[in-house]
Image (tube, rainbow, N blue to C red; front, side):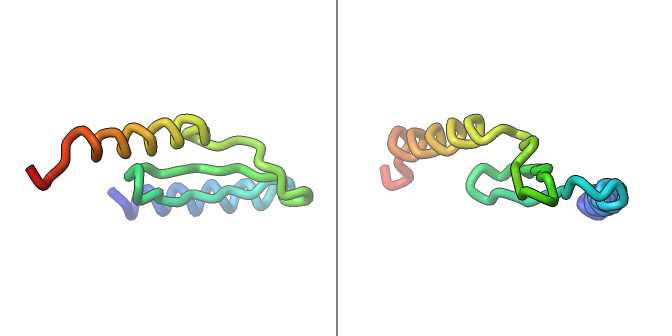
Length: 75
């Protein structure tokens, strides 16, 4: 599955690069165990779109912290 995802991501990057205005970055966030997709303007570096949005990632981080406090593995 990862190979297919990587191939699709590479294809999308090539298509965006051919348009010359946007770049695509796909990364895996270990803390949330989620893929994050960022589209940036290549000239300004401005973030145009992020999926999932940063506020959703931050909410997920906070929930993970609370989960750690509520369900301590030491008990």
